Image 1 (tube, one colour):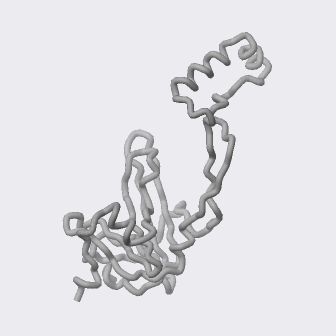
Image 2 (tube, helix red, strand yellow; image 1 turned 45 degrees about the vertical axis):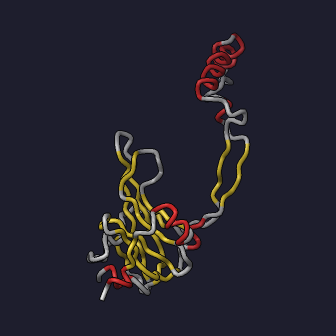
Image 3 (cartoon, rainbow, N blue to C red; image 1 turned 90 degrees about the vertical axis):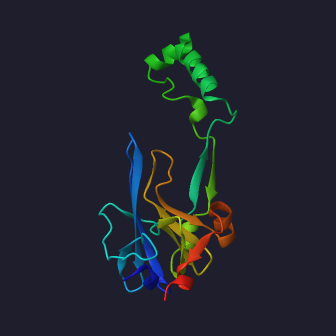
Length: 196
């Protein structure tokens, strides 16, 4: 199977495995389950062979829990890290702070970093399930990074490595072609227009 053979296939599931490394780059792998149960690695380029490959055992399905995602808000006064640190030191080194600590009631972490409000964001992975792959987009100067355009307008890609702690390794998606073009430019090519 080649990348062009993905056009017209339907995505049933996406499995992602992210390996975090505190001393360098986070690494990820992404596997797509297509209609018919075939599991493949995300395609590397417009002319690459797409091999059937099982995801790592500890890879997680992005569709297993499509409930809304909690976003925890901390630091209601919007203090700087230095201000929070100074206030924490002052509270814990005071007589009452030390007394509380001795009886086990001391602050374990600065209270400014305790959540004070939670909001829920829509889990947009739900818009990727059961979607047909409409096209494969790529840039001439970046032959090894491609984008799958889905029938509902979403465009997905895969970032294999990113700096530790950024959360950028793994699946990335754009909600529309307009957003994709605003972020990546318009100099992309469509595999459906170049493949025989």
